[in-house]
Image 1 (cartoon, helix red, strand yellow):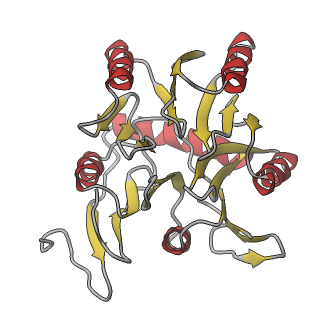
Image 2 (cartoon, one colour):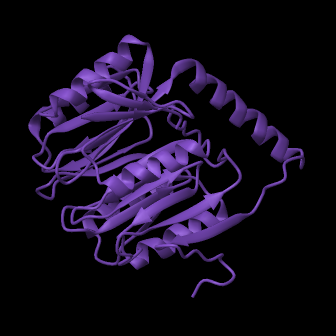
Length: 311
């Protein structure tokens, strides 16, 4: 059964529950919430989800998505670690995590304190990770694949935006950056052909995701189009339903059991968010924007601690 979330409005039917708008280490049955009061990030033009569909994901991840929704937050990225654990990025640089490496948590905290937009968190099949933030900044684990790191450093030095990084379950990888540019190694031929065709049409690829059996989905043309191979039928039906409503696809995250989270944007809301970002940026230039502070809360049983007292 799939679930959908829309801000402060939950609806149930036989297929979906509807809601929308929208290193941690070894916290048994607990997750960490990093909160922010600012709801928009100025370091990139990323648009945050209006609709969040879920299917067969961990119950704690489901609960955290609902919590973000009830607080009026907007989810920008969801990731599931290959051996368990997850991360949910919301409101540009806030996040919830569970069972993620401490080194990764430290880097997320650094980005949060800098109030930089967290664009994505990505894991390799063996558990190495990378966090992409701002336009083309990134942090990666110490044992992250060196060939991928080298390509990302080239992109970073050129000042080009990193759109997407993804790994197949067999260790292949693909990097999408700038306009119609990519690096890849050992990815399915069907995906390679699709990337070539999208590039020939001068359309920009926004995101690529893989299932644990090497199925894939690529999102392009600002979310107005998607192509896929060997993904769950319920996911396909949900995507087609939203496209029928003229919405745009943001991203898809697959859990190790092939459960999934689907992020969609309402096109009207998307245009409003982009305009709002432009207005906020202008205010910042005019020194009229005041940034609010952050708090870090560790949730474990009935205990919580503020950042000044956390050990």
